[in-house]
Length: 154
Image (cartoon, rainbow, N blue to C red):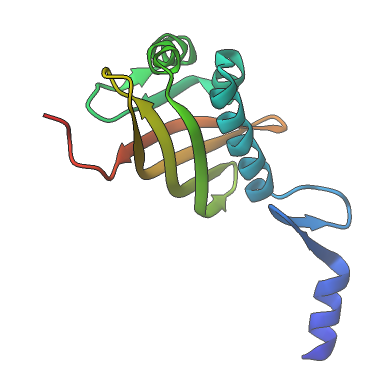
């Protein structure tokens, strides 16, 4: 048992965000975590192009209380509204990332701040499910769904 543990420790080392092999190849989980962090950073900075760059050309975005949004260009148009509305302080907490071949799925929670019409801000939190597809050397969002845990507004 000890020799197995030693072999394993020589072949991989753990870093924040995932396991990295000695060869320097980053796992899908580490890459997806980094892209998710970048997505939130771009969102909070109001950088729509940085947000949309994570999506595959044929991706589908599934926001709550809205029909499916198909394609990167349509996702860009859809996201202009909430980004322009001032939704901010977005952060993701990954629960897990699983991979099978060129497909991975990412499950977790989020929290963000939503400005209200009266000038106040409302905290929102909920969950998400993202499906990723490997395209060449890149991981891109193929499907992205999320929903709030707060009761629906009336």
